[in-house]
Image 1 (cartoon, rainbow, N blue to C red):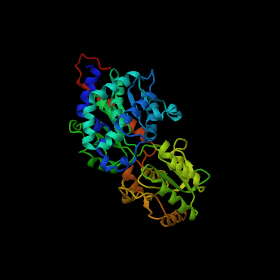
Image 2: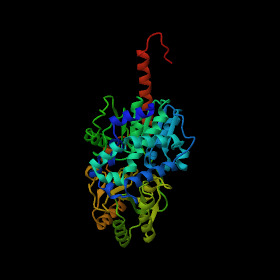
Image 3: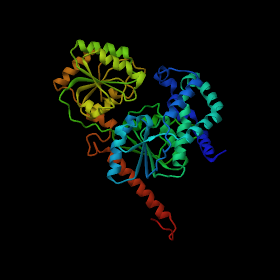
Image 4: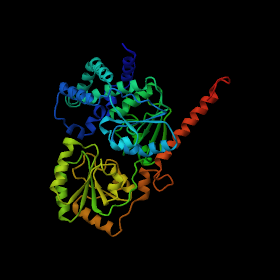
Amino acid sequence: MPKWFKRIQSILEKEPETWLAYLDGQQLENIPHLRRLKPRVRGSFLRVSVFFFRMFQAIQFKNKPNTKRFLVYADSANQQSALEDTLIAFHRHECEVTSLIKYQNFDDSAKIQGYQPLSFSPLDVLKTAILLIARFNFLRKELVTTDKFLLTHKLDTFCSVYAHLAYFERLLRHQRPHFIIVSNDHNVANRALLAIADDHEIDTVYMQHASVSSLFPAINVKYAFLDGEAAAQTYQQCEPNHPPGKALRTDRHIFLSGQKKKLAARPKPEIYSVGVALNALDNPRDIDAFLTEIKSKGISAKIRWHPGLKDRALKPLLDLMTKHGNVAKSDPREETVGDFLGSVKALVAGNSSIHLEAALSGTVPVYYEFTPADNPDYYGYVKQGVSKQATTVEELARFLKRIDDGNATINTQAVQHFSATYGTEWEGREGEFVVQQLLAQKQSKKDRDVSQAPTNCPTT
């Protein structure tokens, strides 16, 4: 068999498809909405067909970037946002950086930030097909054993493991950056890149981009930049979450580096009573009822949806905004989260990381379940004092009155538990902190290599 196949086969023996596609492969029963999000077409043959159709859409014939000293990958708009300040700091230090982003998210903002699209070559497609054929019996058995739902509804997710392993194996085969940096540890592409990096013994870096859960995989990178003590404590509970064939590395370094998204923004002239942040967990019927109630209370709202909501999942929300004349919209593709938060008096959301972003930007966050949650206060924002909680629109209206009267403030100590730099000299400079630490680690490694070199060996 070809060398590339043997290398990928060796990786999959240590970290199989059901671990690289972590959420579906390991946490399906613990995250109910993964089962509720059903595709239009079902069945293993159709899911494979959909996968290859999407892969062909992402084909480019000249698509092999030259990897430089730092390789950064963003798999979503949220990850791109979390990496933005770090990329700026890299350029300020004149570091050589290659930035890749998921093909579907390669837009004007990505171009401005210097990203290149992760696009496949015809050879990547061929390799993916070979891997799928070679491993299909094994994969099918694993999925049926876990839950047949995965085979009929999610098989394309597991196929994407092969596509990303083939792409990153080709990308890194002859090029070795000093660091590979990701801002997510459970998406397929991110995990495939980290697996290839480990195989090539390249130092890996994980930068937290949103609040974390005990359902996440164990940290298994050399350098992890977590927002605060809350994330560090949560990841302690994740230590058992790793494939049996791949032990946790012993040289892990954890830094508490604060929340990394750019949030500072000047308030806009028109201020809305509440900003309503929605994601895939929120049922449109419940949102409809909520908007009707707040209209009766004279509460003006501005709705922002999660950037991952698109097409069929987004349409019901857009229809609701058309139906309700008392709401404005915040399109995450056009308005930054900082600008959104700067235009509202309070932030209302269910289980979402935007609570912390609101508090960091000076906007009071309110936890409100539009749809009853499978795991109430999932991230602990209410318990820790970052967010206030309202269970009815009447409670929400009373709380908004307190904000108008100046009687609702941000709990600084609670916010620092989640974002270590809040209120310190590093607030707003988290990207600079990350880059300084990585450059220091790089210099330290270089110094160690020099001290261990033979006296007649050149050290430059």
